[in-house]
Image 1 (tube, one colour):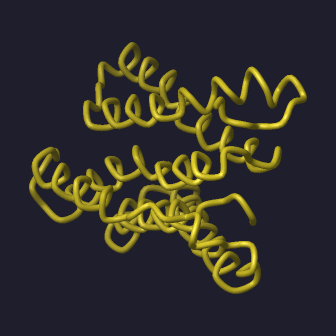
Image 2 (cartoon, helix red, strand yellow):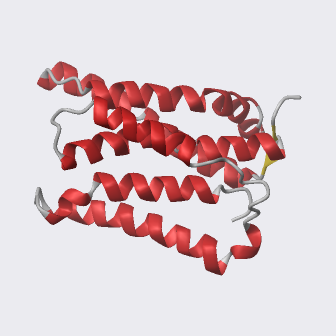
Amino acid sequence: MAGISFKTQELYALVFITRYLDLFWSYVSLYNTVMKLFFVSTSLYIIYLMRFKFRATNDPSIDTFRREFVIGPAALLALIFNYEFIPSEILWSFSIFLESVAILPQLFLLQRTGEAETITTHYLAALGMYRAFYIPNWIYRYWMEGVVDVIAVVAGLIQTALFADFFYVYFTRVLQGQKFELPA
């Protein structure tokens, strides 16, 4: 798992745990429950693999981003911007704000190394595309349901913007068969 930020993986696990705590008091459907459990369990399993099975591939001297720089602001924003000042809504808002910046440790790791293996760049592209696909969903929900989730839209646009530089290099180099290297 060389080239993958352990700290980003921890942040994603925190995102999914805080977002899906409603599993304990709210049932939507079997599919919804299974998917929430899948996101949480796979995130925790990735952390387990990175911490124990593939420990030798994790280099803490390169993965130096301080998580509190994103956790603190996300918590503060969640206290200020939420749809109802109750723990479940605050945790949901926190997870949305944190997810928008959870990729930062990975981007800082890429910046420190200046390059990445092709498989790592494909993984990061999948993470970015996952969020970019929310944009058509927002448009659909607006046109069909008249719903605009301002918190999710703003956070999603921030996350998509953070990926912009990565996607430029990804599309102009990796998809052209070249190695992922940041411009000097």
